[in-house]
Image (cartoon, rainbow over all chains, first blue to last red; front, top):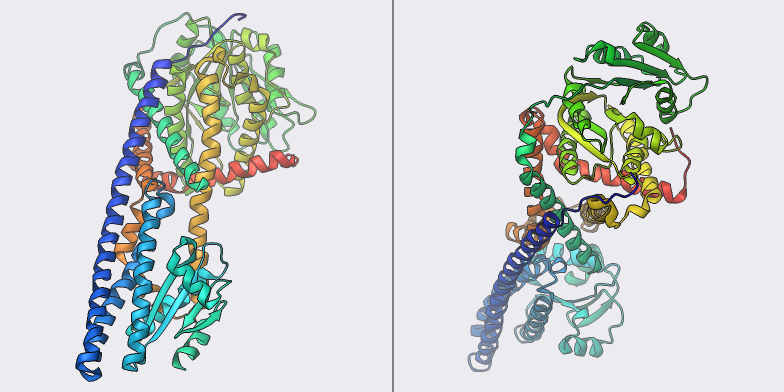
Amino acid sequence: MKNFKKQINVGTLLSAFIISTILFVAGLYVGYGISTQKLSSVEKEILEINRDVENFQIQFLLLDVLGENATCPVLKNTLSDINKRSYALGSKLEASNPESEILTYREYINLKKEYSRVLIGYWLLANKFQKSCLSDITTIVYFYSKTCDRCDDQGVVLTYLKNKYGKKLLVFALDTDLDEPGIEAIKKHYEIKKYPSLIINGKLYEGFLGVDELEEIIRG
Amino acid sequence: MILTIINYIAWYIFVFISVVWILVFLQNKNKIRDTTVKTYKLPSVTVIIPAYNEEKTIEKTIKSVLSLNYPKELLDVIVVNDCSTDRTKHIAEKFTSKRVVVLNNEKRMGKAYCLNKAIKISKSELIACLDADSIVEKDILTKMIPYFKDESVACVAPALKVWEKKSFLEKIQHAEYILNIFLRKCLEFLDAINVTPGVFSIYRKKVLEEVGGFDEGNLTEDMEIALRIHDAGYKIKNSHTAMSYTMCPKKWSELFKQRIRWYRGSIQNYVKYKHMLLNPKYGNLGVFFLPMNLIAVFSIIILLVTIAWNYTENIVDSIRNLFLVNFDLSFVFSNINLENIVMQLMTTPMLLGLFGLFFGTYILYRAFNISEDDPSESKMGLILYLLFFPFVLMLFWLLAIIYEILNIKKMW
């Protein structure tokens, strides 16, 4: 056949295009809704922890008035409360799986920043508690970055130890990619240049530390 | 981030293609249901059976052709023995008669050569090609022939099922073949059938001669001839009730070889017929099916590779983690948190994936429906086909692309 022109089902293709676009947009919309829902529940928890940290601060004022014997046990309780919740929230925040959620990525980053601000405040108070009450708790600030090779491993080791030591070990994981002024200030103060880096009871350790090495440090 | 966007695009394409199939199906539902056989002046038919080492099946193949419901004087058979090293020649020659001719090649020349050789001596109006590891149902011709009433139809393809479905691999392929019956029927309505299987596709001899017969250098001559027929402006039809059955690979190694051949052949034909791509002259085939197929293969490869990569990464990570925590197994379990798992699963891509799964299942259901097959007979095959087989096929595609780029010599 010399001159031919085959059929194009423009109508069918066009309606398929419209239907699939509607479905796709609907899917994105519902996905966005779920994602926002997840983040707002995280946000609520951050606020609650923040309130606890503020509460902790007020309890500290009692220290001067009532003395150590009366105040330290109360403080210890509050600290372990916050500790439990902040720890669960940290893994919840990681689990909200932001990388596939393009639409809510910015919100997620903002929440992470907010969370790290709360963490810093919490860490400072924990340090203060350690000094004032001569407590045997260990605080570890953990600096990590997306581009760092062994950060995932370090995270696993810390989670493991956290599970093992419970209340006695406080871990504050700070994401250095966030560009959060508070984190930057601590980094500058301790002159942190590489990741993973740990500040254990105020002392800086650079590079990956395994379970055995860390346990040695914790036990002193 | 880029990977995420590609994932979204891949899901979109998957949903789009599924919607096209479903729309085409729903629009033509009545035509599909209407299986009344139309009458038409019966033309003469030559069945060509190219055979290379098919001693196990060729007897059944020839017998199934000889018992077709068709006037004897209008049907003849040409078996082309492509220098088989087993008893193929001996078995085929037992059938030699006025209606059955056996030709022997001096050297192994390939399937396309065998077909062309037989076409030259055939005097029939229509040519049916039949692989020597396949059989046909008695009424196949009476169901297919009426489509030739339309002079612009150059070829009619039948429905193809798996002959034996004993092993897992065969059961999985059974689901795949059923799906192809559905897709081929939908493609017919779009005038975009891109493969006319070597199992009893019937060609108008006049057109075969006009386009120059089968391409003897091609890896997948059944796809090549289909594209060439379209290129010449003719139509290809499909009868989804005309049943034929073929042996499919029983071993993974055979499947691997078959698919690498198919996919490399596809790539070569894409290159050969690139002038059809996006060319409105070739209708739905040019502007929709060929380009869409190309994009779909690439995006699904990317999608599946990412999924597979994530799974492997997770497994490797958990093993690595065990080393990190001095093989304290309690850690692995203590870290499982239902809420977090739900959180991780409830993502937008997962939601879009559910759409995909829903459409895929609907299409499969319809496919079983129109090919009058019972899905409950092959539950396991179906589940494996849906969840596992796409990964295998994509791996084969990936390898075929790599082989083709590196130009590794053919391995069969």
